[in-house]
Image (cartoon, rainbow, N blue to C red):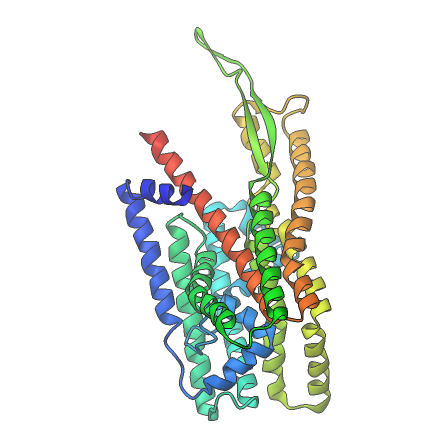
Length: 428
């Protein structure tokens, strides 16, 4: 009901209505791309591969279902997300890149994003060649060398178009473009998933074991939804006092307010980043298999088996979600900048000196909150894999990840809309 009320309020303002329709139009366009197929594929074998391998199920989430349809956007936004991760990690190594991202404002961020776009192209080509080569070895597609190059370029073009759409959506300030494209893909695939569940129930071969699995999945879904809402809504309120200032015959300030610091400052981004980083090495392995060198093939086969081990995958997934929670929080919440802004506006935390002590106080608070937020988010992320290990069903892990992304993106988007509406109400 709250969401419907927000939508109604959103369409009351002409500029917000226009921006919302632009976002909707771009999301529809992204779904059109996801349904334009490439030729020369055996769809029955492709479907069988998806059912037997959770790795491709996860890639399919990122592509918004485009991979299962073998469309021109089959890689989704995976290469773009990987490019952003690489550059953000490099800010810890190269001071110039760090200075550009953190200190040069909007101009620096624009340069940083431009580097990410440029890096996306070679990454997309590598992943496209690797994945198409892998499908060819499994007799799922039938391509000549020229056809392989052609399709790799087409798939890379699909990534670039989706990247462009994502940035245009983000510019409307009603949500993160990358997250919303992934969200729309999951929502678009929901009817077919629900139909599968219904026909499983309706079939005569439906067993008690399957019923138990679906009940477990429903319990898991409720736990994930409750957990994500709890983490996203939880916050620490820091008291702020504005110093009294005398101007002429009037006294200003002296008021008290609160600065809310959320436990999950990074939202859904750590989960998306973690999955993208886990998927990239496996597509790189397929690309390197072009070399046809015996010792390299043996090494790559061992490495692939290592990544496909559910226990190892789950542990790495947890560590990456936890790590990216810290990384993205450091990007979205800058204690130094906040302490400077508070000092310049005459605000201070009771018992804490303005300046460096305030900055240190914020760092300690954010570090502790992020620790618990990262642990909780990491646990929620691997919970489907724990159930998968118990039930021996890939569907639970893939479905759980989908629910995780859906709930997180929905909450993030609602907050963005509320923020825009509060600005309009303030102006009125």
